[in-house]
Length: 227
Image (cartoon, rainbow, N blue to C red; front, side, top):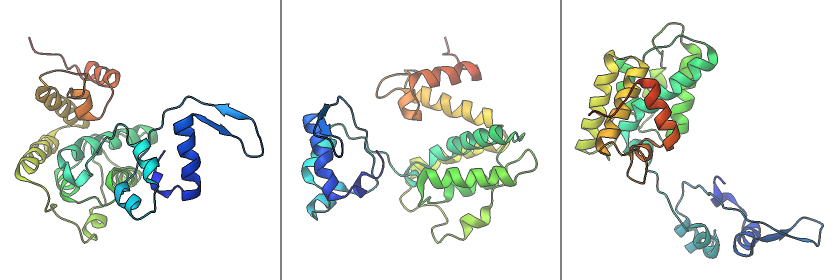
């Protein structure tokens, strides 16, 4: 359930009843229907602030806030940008049947330095446009679109370790193919997790993948645990 903050107040009480009592009535019906559901709600605003301003029901907030997961914005995890850019490039290149193999180093540097106010969706849309425009094997990213933004450049919130990590991945991208960069990124996550794949601190969680998907990618890329 995305943008949960946009639910009108009059509907929030009804949603709260469904979550709390696990029942509801259809419009125009008097028959109560029992349900057994779990809700995954997403928001990019501070719901506690909205609750304090009486713009969001506090009781609904606490009912939804059973197991919160905070995902930092893309500008705070620049080391993820190369992997995401290559993933989207591969995805759209396959859909459009284009033989795109790499992202130029200059373009990757620009992508990593941009602040991404639109987060991952903005990155995805930009890569899709780039794939549409590309005629050769190197992805032609419209860098002018990034330079037009007032936020273009390295984010002030990026600290030294993040910058160093991003720089390492950019170096990998300079000469490597899409698969090379993906393989290196998975290996970094495996190394940080001591080759633990599952669990809250495993490589799958670090990469934002489920365990089955990561195992599949490892087999496809020929990644095995060193003896």
